[in-house]
Length: 432
Image (cartoon, rainbow, N blue to C red; front, top):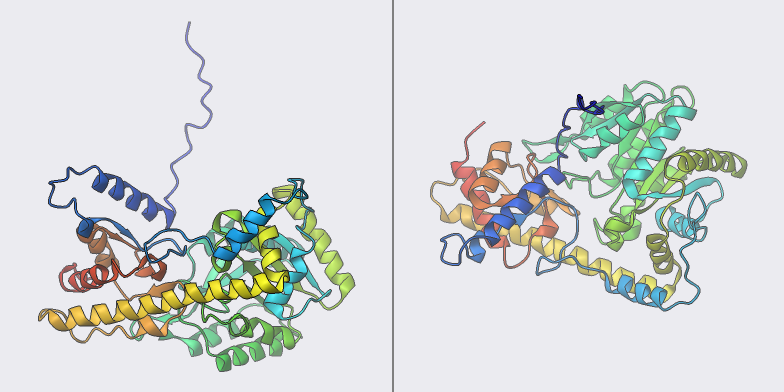
């Protein structure tokens, strides 16, 4: 008797690896292979240990994950609290978290802003795009070229098509503001314009305040007849410059003009709550009643997708933002992280320039000053895909193929090795 075939998934094809986590898998395999080498193998020493400059997660000077001391203290207090339970949160999240998150982002608590706790930045993008698609009929998202590689994926999942506006000039390592402005000015009515208010990912190059003001005026001039939808993806407030107010300046300027802004706010980087998926979505409305209506529709969508957000990260964030002592302690933690990143930027640039000067065959016209001009966790090095591939294959240094490195992956014990490897790649990697 033949065995019946119940396999209904046989025609499903294997999907492509994630642009970031696929490289992480390569790094993990390389690390496992390195650890398995016999002690007498010529590549068994620390100088050949694989280095990951891929994922945007803070690491300390020893290359280890770092739990913020303030977060650690709050978790200890939570664990000892008899009042703590694991009941469901409201659909829109922890009630006391939302006004605290609003105040951090906008400088005020505002009843005309519809806010919901969501699954960090990615969740905020998805809920926001889906809401705009269903209730405003938005069908197109404009993203900077380049941008975080997950933006198009999230937009597609929400049923929205993607176009690009010019943002970064690889030849000069600068922002193409005039081209950006021109492209946005020609966007069709109801187009969602995605912008990074600080620490642009992946380039680390931000607009000046003067440029933000010009851009805001463009949105304002179109608001009455052919409106555009300004959507800010803010994952690095306080992590770009070290100043929470400065990093929110673009968002607050748009808010002051009365524009209907939308903000995806993540606490993953700034509080080190990566795995807790802690974030908010904010939509500025013109009245409290409209904000209530919008919140009700956000609730309906959240209920139909993941029902309720997680509580642990929201409770930590709320404690950080509402207790004055803990807030000041968190600011010190932020300073620790941003100061270390700045020092590693300087060390990387100086290390590359030193190696370049010492090696006669190194092209002296290659400049690296953009590394210290850029801000935030990432540096868009200007390395070509061939140079990136050479780094991973020859030196076991892993980064994304567009040349983006996570500055947090650098530390005093590996920055010189990375610097010299980059110059070696510039010299010996195949040319485009």
